[in-house]
Length: 168
Length: 434
Image 1 (cartoon, rainbow over the protein chains, first blue to last red):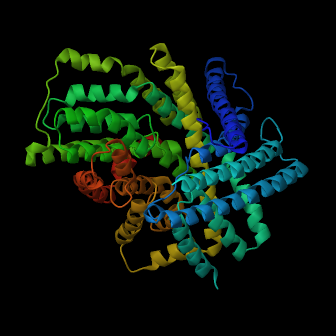
Image 2 (cartoon, helix red, strand yellow; image 1 turned 30 degrees about the vertical axis):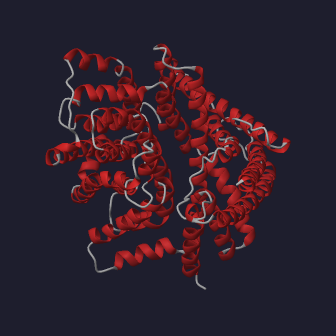
Image 3 (cartoon, rainbow over the protein chains, first blue to last red; image 1 turned 45 degrees about the vertical axis):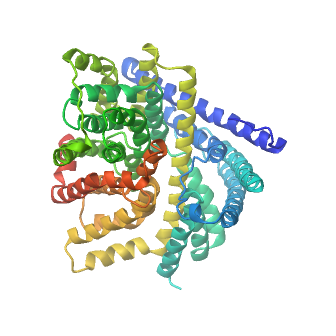
């Protein structure tokens, strides 16, 4: 990810952290491929599947999606309909974009908060994965952390929009 | 206010918010959260939103998505699209309009490793457009065929749309993949036929042809054998039940790395780019599914899906007429929205209708994929047309849309055939079931 000269320390940190988070998601993806292939070959060639592959693969799926969130936001990887906004005047565009980004940040704060509650509920209830009996709750705490990073990434995007507007 | 009214307000609010450039996934989650909170209770709504995101993120079914996405990405960065095109070109290039036909062939085969329409269109636009221009094909034909051919990406397996549809409606992903194969090949053939008729009627569209010797033809195949074998192993293994969908995806992903590695076609940079774009796409898809799940919970408490489906069934209309109305909805929606968002949004509403009318859920999946294919190449928001125009910057949008018209007509005719003869989609999965 290219980090421009005029960006603040805050923006640089968010970009760096988002990239690191995404790196973790990437490692998770590669591990998922290798583990599943290993499980398949152990099952067919040695009739010895790897116990808990199902659990681990599901958890890795969650890691990929959650840890890629801030990076995807910074890279504007989400599907959005810009058909109408594109046609507005620059001033109106700025208003709409500011409102949507702020609403987004509020929504993600709700997610941070609710994931913490969900995680502690799950911890109390002692929910575990079906075969390996791993506890579920740590991944939900991680999701909460990722949503927090998503808030920051959304803020960085908004700052960028403002900066571009300031220049033009 | 009764729940149905709240639901209608919610849907209107959603449609308006979608046009604000706010990501589709978050629009659905937000409207779902607010609506559910209003109808049930704010506490319940807050509860359900975190739970829905968590359930979707940790869903075992969805792990198929990153695996198949990665398989397509890695083979793309290894340069497979170029080879597919060269091979199709070697075999079809000497016919009149042959380069355009080769584009359809290459799109169809690229679809067999890639599950999205815009990725297929983007890939083929970069590879095929320069060739067609070199032989003085008219922009209309050249860009139209890339946009339309790209739409095959979601019909021929692996297809992201089928995976997500299967999870949302609890249908077998293997069956859906199987149901997409024959209709996909048939559609590719119909597209080729469309090109044939077009260039016969207007020969100036494709003025020149090029001859290929038999050695070039045979040589073009050598680079593809491994990929064909990989497809057969992955899909074959899935269809005969050797692999689960996730396992098939993992084997395909590993094969996708190993083949180009052995042939020394994969750089470290290419590998990294493939991984990064896969995590990004995965995140995007999981988010849309999660958002749609929240919105679906809201819709369920509005009772709209059940009210609508029982009302529709009681209408004094033949079921095919209702189906045409449903398709019309999908078509209009598909004109404005990305295929995945559109399908996820409408499944909770129209899937019960289709089932209540007695239609096969697998067949319905194929049909809505076809309708969305139509959506991605029609104005105003045919996403594939925008993708192609992003690559062919000097061609005006109208020209590309105009070039897509013959294919739109073909697709419309094909939809009618599909409604009249559901067996086109169903004979393969049914055969496998026996």
